[in-house]
Image (cartoon, rainbow, N blue to C red; front, side, top):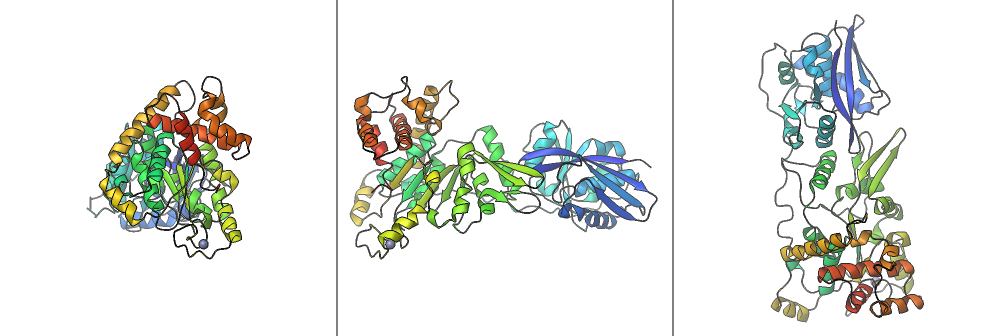
Length: 511
Ligand SMILES: [Zn+2]
């Protein structure tokens, strides 16, 4: 008898590798043997495949079927190999065309009734199949829209193993079944979340514009009800649309996380707000079997917002240091490392003390100075070191509310236009360097003769540095923010006023 051979994809992080599936039927007792480093979920494929084939009136051979997944050293996770295994076994028994299944990459989990279930990670898997030069990929009907987002490869959506077998030349009778679909993409995700909803706190609005223009991380300190969450959730709206590459990455991470992707790539930057009880795995990624991306990976190219940041455990916060340094998340397993993108903009928020009332008017704060200090000290120095913007936000008063409703407020679309022109000024200035945004630029470059600002402009921070009021790192952060403020104003270079504003934007924790 022939050997049935087809292909599937193994995903590790967003990296897909082609796996060859071979099936051979020998004259031993009936059983299916799976070789080639399968994990537990994949091992269960044997039973799913046999039941699915039986219930599709395509019974597998009564003899021993050996299925080999290669390369053997590559770890293989999950249930997405079911369809390929079933078709390789049917090809080995002569039920479908050996040549036809060999030309196609198969992805999909089988239900016991023979229907195909959508799987997570279809988008990165089909990208891998297209890059490997395969002309055709066969996927569950419920994944067909998502697979169709990848250019350069033909997508065949099938609802059942029977439909797949008929496509590959089986002579069995077609029986229509109801395809298993995924939940629809929720529409209007951030409709109504406009910057003009933010009342008062003009400084904080300006800080969000600076954060968007320069790609700076931000820290907001203020009592409950000051609008920290509202401010942070407006930041993605101020960022430009995603590039084609970033859009594919964002949708691929969503696909791997099991979130609906729909039939268009996401072009707006994501916003993720994990709860402070989140584990390191929930934030960074992990889980057994297929490694799933965490909130930080889902926030890549967008905003990761940690409200009540001191309430996160320190090990969870420490896990953010690697992506903040490298823009990449690496998750180590016994025999593999999964990589996810991790270039998010971090916004952290904290109450001024454990009860949240410290510093507010008519404050009823009962926290001791010691517990206040200890509370904010939970935010580690190395983490805060990477945050250029650190400012206080306040609850607004009735008088401010009246004034604010009289003046015209900045809305998201006008703010985004300002951010875009600021970004293009920065990009023109940084042309020929490895950096795109002011937050990327090292202090040594900003202090080099070509960019150095004249002394009168930097007098205030020079003095603060001499007196020990700020560190050298703090000095560089102020320079970076000064440039973003200048870009937002359309200025050639920062003025005394810009440097003064930038100094103000890092005083949250110093008084
Ligand atoms: Zn308090």
